[in-house]
Image (cartoon, rainbow, N blue to C red; front, side, top):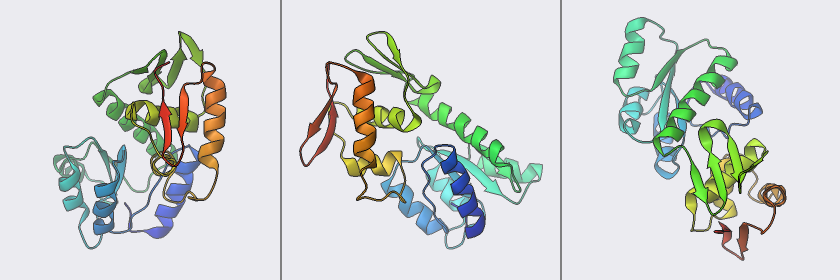
Length: 213
């Protein structure tokens, strides 16, 4: 959530190049609207947002499962303390290096993963989010970040199905073309890598469901 559109656009492009799914909001009300319908893993929050100030956005989001990284031009120690006291999990002053932002987001992501449990298991498939590791019947499977994220969504939702639209929203971002076949393409390669018996069921007009294999 950043009111400087040029900075926000450049940062989002950089994060997407590191396989992050990124949604943008340019004011505090838009940030609250987006977080009301989507549970984000981490929110990068500018403190000086218009309409609803970033401090108020932070207060409303603090305490939930979403981690908050406060991003602001105010870099004094007292400013950082204020941001953390508002409920932010981390604080990064501007200007910043993309590499540091990426490292901090990954660290916050690991904290989010540990809060919901270190390992997901369905049938003979196990997924460890904090070390990006998947095994089936004890055999390790090498997945791309998108394949890993899709499998994690299927395992987290098990035994309920997940629609292609939900996968686009959670694994890609709001810029993903809803008419594209990216979900189907990733599902094909994911199924192939997971092997037999096939662990992913396609439910017509509903979505995909992970089976207890």
